Amino acid sequence: MDVRRIIALALSLIAMAYFAMPAVAFIGAGFSLNKQLGDTVDFHLSPMAIQAAGAAGLAAMDLGVTWGVNYDLNSLAGYPYGYGGVGAITDANIGYSLGLSMDELHGAGFDGSLFGIPLTEGSLTRTSYNNLIAANQHLQDVQVALPF
Image (cartoon, rainbow, N blue to C red; front, side, top):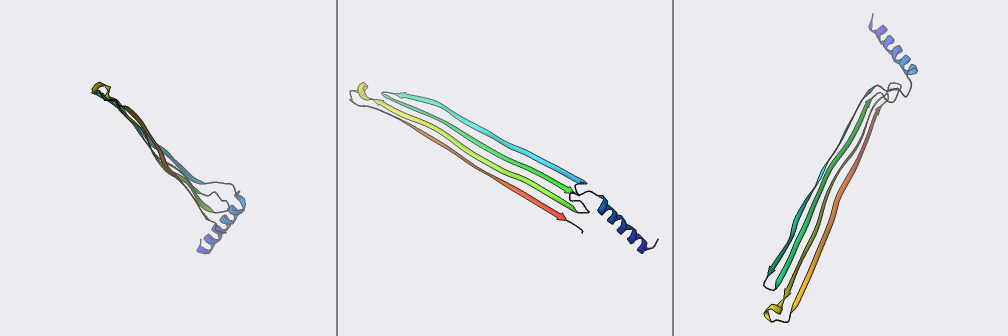
């Protein structure tokens, strides 16, 4: 067989496949990766009561740290477009989060009557803080090659 006959045969096979293959046919491969990593760590500093001669104090604190990382990646490549075209589709979500929470309590009191001082004072202060930083990025890419 000479080269002209081989080229003519190949072109005729491609033309028959062009008209015979439906547009919704798929020949190819795909993969999916999905993972979420994260945790919360809590620190509880128990209330400490301090009593000295005529004075009292209280201190307590709770700290929490939350973190997370996630990704979701899907890719599909092959013959999804029909009539001899090839293509690849990638869709991904990538994100992270970081959070911090704090509850703090402290107080003090003084009773001067034990020492003959006509003074009694007390205070109690509470501080709360909550913050979360998070982001999610969506990526999408489509590549197609159509020969006709």
